[in-house]
Length: 461
Ligand SMILES: Cc1cc2nc3c(=O)[nH]c(=O)nc-3n(C[C@H](O)[C@H](O)[C@H](O)COP(=O)(O)OP(=O)(O)OC[C@H]3O[C@@H](n4cnc5c(N)ncnc54)[C@H](O)[C@@H]3O)c2cc1C
Ligand SMILES: NC(=O)c1ccc[n+]([C@@H]2O[C@H](COP(=O)([O-])OP(=O)(O)OC[C@H]3O[C@@H](n4cnc5c(N)ncnc54)[C@H](O)[C@@H]3O)[C@@H](O)[C@H]2O)c1
Image: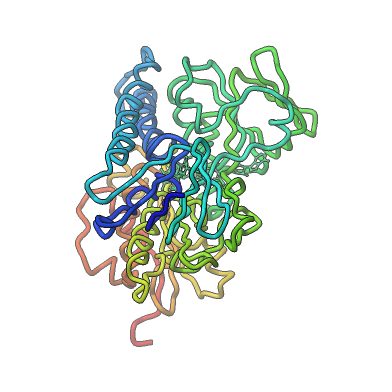
């Protein structure tokens, strides 16, 4: 048996838990895959590197409306791919080597294998004879793609976000099942690089859980870029003339060279031996934790996609910072900051969101004031020749505070930051609009004008 002060399962957001506080302690790090987890290897970072190449291609294709007749002559997929993984793969390798050497921050031992609990504080790792035990154990095992049974049962080949970025050659056509974050980002990447993309949706719109104006504006924008197959219920998948053929319940069929499945992600908690512990799991697979990351078993914690209601890296990082503190400060616990959580989808156009949709704000009983501001009605919107992008702000008339802010348009993920700041620090919307300068004619004037369009009662009313 090998006993440790701290055992970390998963090296995504779990890896930085080895703080200087553990310099004199024994730490075990268990990882069944490559070091660095989803974000570094198959998630945020590589996707955005592909998105950047896609943006360049898309700009060239759309340049004529500005009077510049550029075009995309050739896409060197293998060079695009190598730029991404030539940078990322060495980082993952270096991370493993650093921890295997014991690292400078603590006395770390790496176990390369799949971990399963055998009791509340004990684990077995595939490939190792000894049992691993820990005073404190952190479950940071992340999530993985969910594949509908109709596809797995059919035996057709398919890609997921884990594999599609490493394909040998660009296909001429790609069928994507799903209309969420991952589907939208890859549809942008592949369609911009010249692939004929078809997106299969269960409903009418992409990103259907977003604010209605956001979802509708985005749907209108993307249907000019790739084909949307709406209200689709998959009944079977098989080998078609081109590659893959999906059959839908109403008799329609969808064909493509390659199939990408992007239908959500499930926490990696089902093959973790948790049934041998007192750790509880929700029906959707998330470990039950309190606001400090504590499971029901004393000394066993969880963070990130394994337990969080948000499958986002900035949230996993924030939770990691809390758990890193809480592990060594049992009498001064820090809660997870889950109040103002933004997100962005790096599709074309970008989408960024913080806070409630209009429907959620109304359902929560707020007396709301709402403004939908077109980019095209601002000076930089003219420069962009923009006709469809929006910023939507929702505020509470009584408190004057922002309840939700949403962008669909260029630079959405950057433009939303002042709104995140205002909501995080409780700044009133009218004070935010007029209490500071907004650089003219920067694109931030979209947010300024949106705020100015909100209607509040006079201050002395
Ligand atoms: C394609 C894609 C794009 C994304 N883009 C963004 C983005 O732009 N912005 C954003 O905020 N979020 C994005 N996300 C989400 C983000 O990547 C995740 O929320 C985040 O990486 C989760 O971190 P984590 O530490 O919880 O899990 P992970 O990083 O997944 O780490 C879990 C680790 O645990 C290991 N593991 C699992 N089970 C075991 C076991 N039993 N034994 C040993 N090891 C185990 C895994 O191998 C993995 O290395 C994206 C996700 C995907 C898939
Ligand atoms: N930029 C980012 O921050 C970013 C990027 C990628 C992923 N992520 C994170 O990863 C998570 C997972 O991404 P995702 O796109 O897989 O999930 P998602 O929840 O965003 O979208 C899933 C999509 O699949 C559809 N779907 C679900 N089951 C289906 C079925 N059986 N048949 C057909 N369609 C089905 C849903 O209607 C939805 O359109 C995201 O929710 C997000 O938290 C974040």
